[in-house]
Length: 482
Image (cartoon, rainbow, N blue to C red; front, side, top):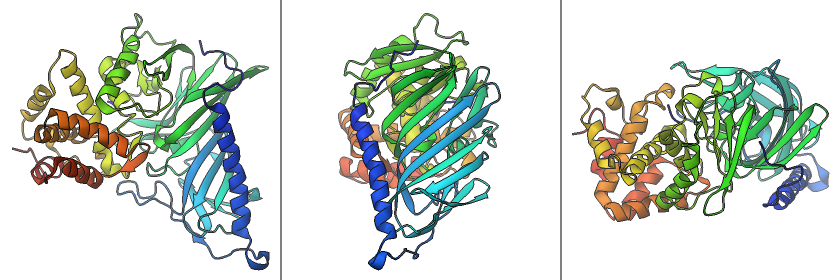
């Protein structure tokens, strides 16, 4: 985070068939697993489950996410009316039970639930705030793959946090854009909305003809019927719900490829006077190549940007494969920051929101590396300038690895002091070993999760010694380090 579409009426020729087969196999597996779970000796119905937890146990958002299952795939079918703001959705969620379940929860804020099924059978539905509880007809055995389908509709709510920033499904003058970090995705689709549970996605969006819908991954299909156009986007690599997005409106679509062959699709809001000479957007392939040199192979099969008026949101977001940047802050520094998140935050995802500094510290340090490598201030210059700030500056309000409240996970210490931690590691191990360490970290946890403890253990193993002086003073210490 930082404060004309190509013709495609059929499947894209880059792995779409394999993904479709995988989706079909997953659905078949869901039915097979569910049937196996419901049948025992004498075909007795299993009744030994318990309700899954109503939260994933996050230290800052205790009711965000849910326990008892792991989602493997979301198939979201959405229809949006920009005029009324109404969203009609069907979410097909394929998951694996990690415990014997009599019921399980999904996160969904607002919206009316029209129906819900589990493995084709009607499920009982209960609402309690953001908690949507489904009680299937038959209990689910641990290890069973099951499929839930939730139909819902309404005008999505936005979420305003203590600092005044909004997130969620945000209406714009000609459409909408979805900002999900940290909790906003539950405003537009039901799911297990904690970063510890990632899944692949198919996102299909139907809008009035002449309106475009942009999402994560690759455009798999586009079709127009009458006065409606449907866009089908496919994200095959695992993705956390908070970096899923949909942007609806009028866009100028720019396409290209990186030197390594990754297709780039960027969407520029036609109502915004931004980057008219292409100076920023034109550097995107260059920035991609630089980032791969610094951080290792790009972790996804698609790339690009969404530049939108974004409902006056004052921050950019690392939406997976296609970061969303408001038009009035679209500049190279923000592109570098959000692109680096594809490695740090999206591919290597924090286990809990307490580990947010691993996202933002690395992304901020990427900005410092970019200027260092392109004739500007060095990372050491950035470090020294920030370290010179007074002891009562906001930068020293709390340790980056221990934000005191949920409102603080996007605070200055998480970003800037987090980057200073990364620089202190570089100073400790030297430039060459630092480059190897960073690339190794991104590869070791590629498409997975990691915690602060995972990171400090990894760094010390690579350094061959303990680095308690860094952790105690810079990562966990109160106040300005000496």
